[in-house]
Amino acid sequence: QVQLVEFGGGLVQPGGSLSLSCAASGKIFSINAMGWYRQAPGKERELVASITNGGSTNYADSVKGRFTISRDNAKNTVYLQMNGLKAEDTAIYYCNVDSVLSYGGGRLRSWGQGTQVTVSS
Image 1 (tube, rainbow, N blue to C red):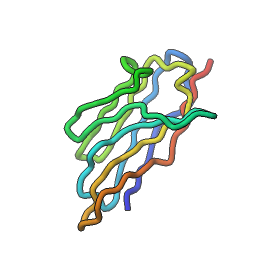
Image 2 (tube, rainbow, N blue to C red):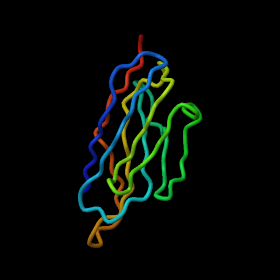
Image 3 (cartoon, rainbow, N blue to C red):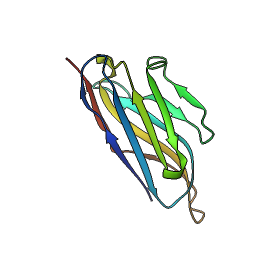
């Protein structure tokens, strides 16, 4: 009912930058919070950053000052600008969208397919 398509990711050297985007489509009436999570090998999935429909943001301590989350409500799209990347940022990044479905479909939390970010020299 809600499809999320992620773009971006790839291989970058330490100190470099990458940008991720995630577009939501489907029977969406409105979107509440949008966010990015990541999961490194052998570790649990963790919140990287989130943004409410009002624009309030929240960041993991490990990325504060380096990553910036933003959204375009008209395009149902969330972005993550990652600067000053470190080896420990290497993970699969997943977008997450909390939406209200059209036609009384209720509330749905959806996940993107994940995109690999590798920081290595």
